[in-house]
Length: 197
Length: 197
Image 1 (cartoon, chains in turn purple, red):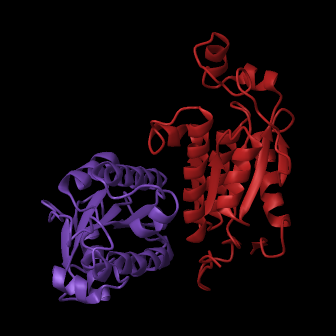
Image 2 (image 1 turned 90 degrees about the horizontal axis):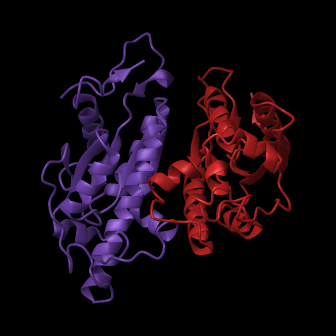
């Protein structure tokens, strides 16, 4: 595995940047660990002097996207808006860390088309039974009781990503290891996306 | 309290932070200088170690808010979305610099209600005839020709802000002076919103 965020010894950590800044798009089932990983990535990037903003699907649905539901049309609009914000941040030199189920390939293709080359898709994967056992928000229980219509993994489909930059299996690694894998994948994607002073 | 823009002790002493980070809401006619001021504020804040993101109404309407027009309902939705993004950034310790006409008191009240106490309204003011003479995007000419319906200042109303934190008159000061006034107003608003060295 390549060294993570390796920088020459004489350079202060605060001057480390990711160029161009990626949009880290975390896709996966509810309970797979997307929000946890996003929350761990943000301070790590910031401590290294990289501006980073989290766009968490659950949080965005409470504010900006309040009023959108889970119909095909609303899911599309949800992703479209988040992708545009990520792009806007990205164009201003910020890393956007998106944590949103984005269950369909078509939704992720939409995000990729809006974001452009900076789009860096990470499939945060854990088997459904693992996610359901974790059930951090009690959503699976409610979905199984029929209290939530169209819940991804229970009553709505999740299509595994066709071509993610990285798949992280959170049933077999902890948050710290997942974050390290993501940082390594950012380093390795292209010669132009390396860490410069 | 939102996450602070606190710097580690080993960062250079020249690094300045704004606590808590404000949402700088620039309101005013097209051509008054909002976008220019926003563009000048951002690098100034960043040079001082403060994460700052611009939300420019014209840019947002090309992406996130494409599809929204200038009806009362669409103007409301435009402002609602921008305010929620500003709040989200703010909650993650970033300064949001919003440059959007926001012509009605009700729209600015909406923004203030969404953003909360961090809302810092700056009326970027210049007389209509000055804005129209500048006409940086040729919009006034098109509006006068009737090619744009509901153009603020020509065929739609602009209500002067009732209680801005600051009014900057760009017909009598240059960009640099306007920016300095805004920085000073941020310093002066509250004991907790000061510039620390």
